[in-house]
Length: 333
Image (cartoon, rainbow, N blue to C red):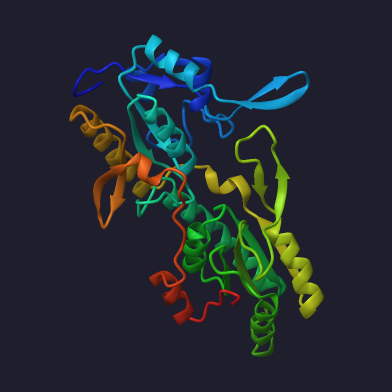
């Protein structure tokens, strides 16, 4: 709008807006002063995959491919390209549109920081900051009441958020999906701390964590979603198991959607602004199907189709894992 006087449409509720043809022209006043706002002024949906869209027929939920409907709406509104802002699910949906002749440029946004090919997504730093602040407050009450505090964080099947927030807050035990834990080892750490006079312990656990040979804890299933599994409840399960196995008093806290809200950190605001500008540069250069990424300390781009359907996870030998172990943090293994 400012430099190139382009007409920009805002698509409401992500792919759902493309399916239902809900989009509107954005004016300067619509986007002025939104840098300090979290979330999105356009709305979003995690249940609207054009390739697998839930439709009610005869009282039954069926899934249909409505990509043709999306293409029709894109052409009817004379859209030259779509900037898709999101994580691995969004980029998988964008890859489908690219294969059907619609140009998409991706911008990485997810608190999970799990987008393949990108070292940092925007939203991640804000979520880590929020989680670490919450853990600091829990540290105070854990110390006062001499309890084991088990704090459950988001992240799905990737442990980046739990790892960073756990290290930042000095958690005693960090449990992430990439390193299955042994309950006996967890209790040994807690009991040792108790014996040497440490009267409280902090455990940060990712919602996708699981014991060796076990499975994740599923909170519920949403059958109308392309990805029906909703993780959650591992903290409550651990509290029961720790109390039964060790006799130590434990409490669970699930941070939930607190991690997703609030004012973005300055680092996230800067990163998002840089991503957006680089996406525009790519469009003006005639790029097709590219994802903006932050890689090795600089802006770059990769093919969206190269990251579709993939998830970046924490390597077991990641430097931050080594650092945490070096200062005495246990991963329950």
